[in-house]
Length: 199
Image 1: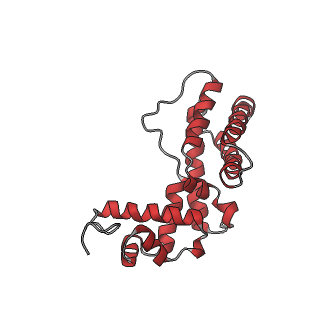
Image 2: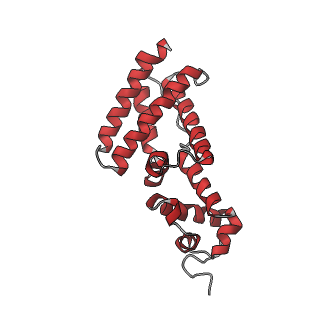
Image 3: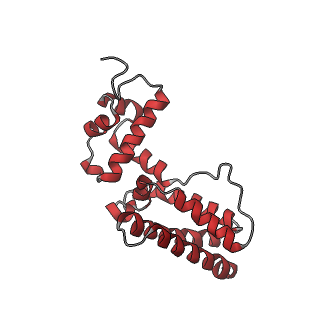
C-alpha cells in the first residue's frame, strides 16, 4: 500500500483524529448509536479499526466527543457584539445561531427527543453545558446580563423552543428555514423586551 491510497495517506495525529470525528459525525447523524459499528466507523474514515481505539478508546468515547463538538455553538470569533436597536441585535443573534446549524449539529441539538437519550447522564451533562453556554452568548448579544440566573434560565427555556424549531425545519420539514427564523426572532424579541425586565 502506498501513501497515495485514498484515505490511507499519512496524517499528523490531529488531522487523523479530525478525520475520525468527521466520519463519525456523518454516521451518527444518519443512524442511531446502536446501529453504527466500529468497523463501519473505521471504513468511513478510511483507517484501520485499531486507530479508532488508539485515538478515542472505544465507540462510546468517540460518540460522546461527537455530541460535545456538535452541541457547542461556535465562538463569536471576530464577530463584534451587535449594536443598534433591540430588533437589530435579536436579528443578529438568531442569524448567528441558525447559521451555525449543519445537518450533523441539528441531529445532536435534537438528540434527546430524537433518540430518547435523555436518561444518559453523560450526554445530558454535555447538552446541559452547551445550553448554558449558548444562553450566556445570546444574552450578551441582545444586551442582557449573562450572570443573571433568572435571565439565563429564561433563555435556556427559549433554547428548548429553538431545538424544536430546528427539528421541525431540518428533520421533519414542517417549517422552512425562513419560518424557523421568523419564529425564533419574534419569540426572542418578545422574551427580551417583555419578559426579562419583569423577572
